[in-house]
Length: 560
Image (cartoon, rainbow, N blue to C red; front, side, top):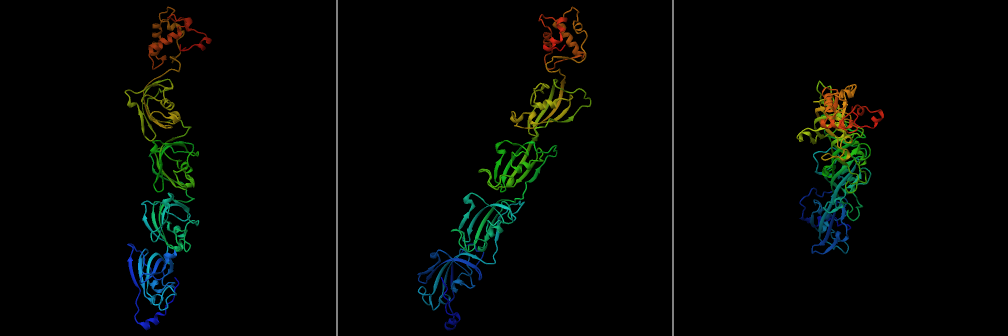
């Protein structure tokens, strides 16, 4: 409504005496009022203008847009309306009764407002700001731990609700079920938001009030944000990173004994919990009850994880923060990981090894009088405890009525354990570490995970020296010459089973020979006798004992 200047108030005052003032009825005042209109402020409000009898002569609502102006400074509205909005709160409704000398006076306004007419304005204040205003921020929630705050040039991901000062919602990322993701300082945000989120922590929630000139100013935005609108954003910061960020590693727990650190090319097994910076879990190996197994530095995992796994110890726990450019980048990973997401992994290293590793042997006790040591084909009795590298027990000889007895080098044990039991003295104790390729491999075993490194605590209890594979008896000294004469103890030129048995037992008892351990001695001697009794007549003759070289090549069990 164009301003029609009334007659000079001083002249009226001189003629008429004391004038009636503007009457204000604050019939709807909001519960919370943080600011009231003052002279010099800019306001945006709707109004209905009526005469005292209720007849309407003007309305901003009918025009479809509110009135905008500066209060008390070259105002474009009648003085009474300018005065009537002073002291108002946003969302307040007032009934402002304006006498003629504060309206259009004795002249009126064309055919619309008669002379000397009192006007009534029903006003709803929509917005209020001042050119001196700055972005206002109010922290609604801030995490106790804040390791990093938003700085210029950072990339941020945040949720928001955007409202006008009157509370009208104009936009929300929550309705889109997607964060707003952008770089700061690239001009993709209004200035007020850029300024308002600086210094925020991940997980922090702020209310940001932005005056129109730091928002969309006189242009507004589409049909949702009118011109000259103060905007309020309720912002929850979900993520922040910088393109210069590297992997961040926070060691939370490390074993006192760290004999080796993981290197490129090692095969590693670890548990993890994967979360976003706001704490939301996106994946966990624990939920699958299975470690994640991979080669380090070979590109089988995201680059940040590949880097973070280098240098770990078995049993170590560490928190790893991976920026998007070292994780899944701008595209994310399916529905699980959004684009440009910073990932946090809480790792627990179970074990690692190198495909070239051999059995690691640590002697924990060795008797001083250690002369005779175990070797392939020896029969041993031993005690063991087996566990994973993180200390998880798997099995133990103590779980059985008696310790195991086994012949070494016969394929009865996993290769690494067989190797670790060789070279031991009776009463010696060892701790051996067996890589998977010398244990149960990628398939694992009952109770043993796939690709698991095993640790054995060993004690050798008894040992009987053995004979080479395929032999039943070996000479420890030169055999008697002539052999048949020595064997034919009654000199009757033939050797029966009983005579043969007595001869062999004598050689063993006097330390000149060794019989296969672990088998029934009489059965072994009978097998030896049968092998020498070539014509199967129940006796061995000198001719049967003395075979030619060619015959020896095709004979079996030619121990004698």
